[in-house]
Amino acid sequence: MHNGMVKVITGMRRSGKSYLLNEIFYEYLLSIGTKVDHIIKFAFDSADDLILIDENLLEVKEEKRKVDPKRFLAFIKGKIVDKERYYLLLDEIQNLDSFEAVLNGYLRKDNIDLYVTGSNSKFLSSDVLTEFEGRGDEVHVLPLSFGEFYNARGKTKEEAYEEYSVYGGLPLLLSMTSDEQKAKYLDSQLKNTYLKDIIERHGLKGDVNIGELLDVLSSGISSLTNPTKLESTFKSVKNSRISRITITRYIDYFIDAFILSKAIRYDVKGKKYIDTPFKLYFEDIGVRNARLGFRQIEPTHIMENIIYNELRFRGYSVDVGVIESREIENGKDVRKYYEVDFVATMGSKKYYIQSAYDIPSEEKWDQETKSLRKVNDSFKKIIVVRNPVVNRNSEEGFMIIGLLDFLLDENSLEK
Image (cartoon, rainbow, N blue to C red; front, top):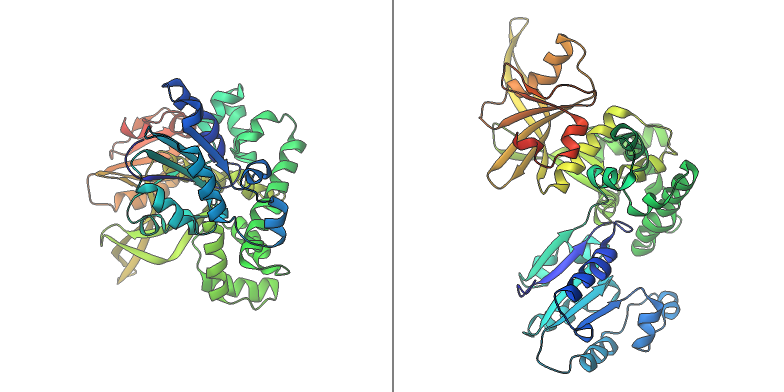
């Protein structure tokens, strides 16, 4: 608050951005004594709000245009009548034409504190610093973490995880009781909101490839991929000639809509990033499962996606670790590469994390820890295991922690 920046609240649709701004934050402002008429709420996808500035939501959609900024500016000007501080809470700001210029104009006014939400990162995430002249402050809202879901659900930890790993953490799911209701909701959101938004925004009507690409990506979470590999898959399996250039563009669309998140490989020893191949994870695992008709509920891959989201929820930058090693094999000097599932970084903190569904034998232990043993630095190395284990440190200094303990304790990495 009051930092002279526009606070940009981003996230996938239905993740709770509007509720955070218009309910939770609005009530907070009232609780600290802010006058009601000094809190101005306006949603650019609300028919009732648009009427206030003589705009019609249906006409705006039919004419495929954005809201007239002159009408909005005139409306706000009539609301700000003194020099006391005003709070502007603007929802779905990307529907306002020339919104960057409008917001920059408000930033120059000392008595306005500005908060906006948006569902498309091309408008409000990747360009936020440049568009707002270095005065943009992003708050990214993820769907519910497992800890939030568990605290609200009222089930045992195991029951809550089983539900969460299938249906994910979109907040409205907490009001639903039947599996059929949850499945229909997620399927509807995917088809009628997420994909529809992308198709309309980028003029892709009639293009079946974008839906088929999402199918392929849904099946391949936690696996390394790249556009060239995906192009070959389409050619051999789908009998389609979609190019890697188009595939790259479509993946960017999914990331911009916050459906997917990309984890890039990081060379641990060389301390540099490797652009390709990369991994893609779903911002909400329930959306991923719905895309596949809940037919591919692979516990290991889903667990890895949930761990990735949890690390991001806690504020870490998350990469896929790669360690190059030269070894003697059959008398020959060979170069090998080992993978660490996640390198989680926040400021001076860094953790190397492996996701292991089960470690039933010494052979499996060696397999899961081989890459960690190749890391030479002193940062903590952690193995998250699905099946219940006693949290402990191994003889090699690796920390072993059960998945639910990891998810339900925000300080679990520090112990």
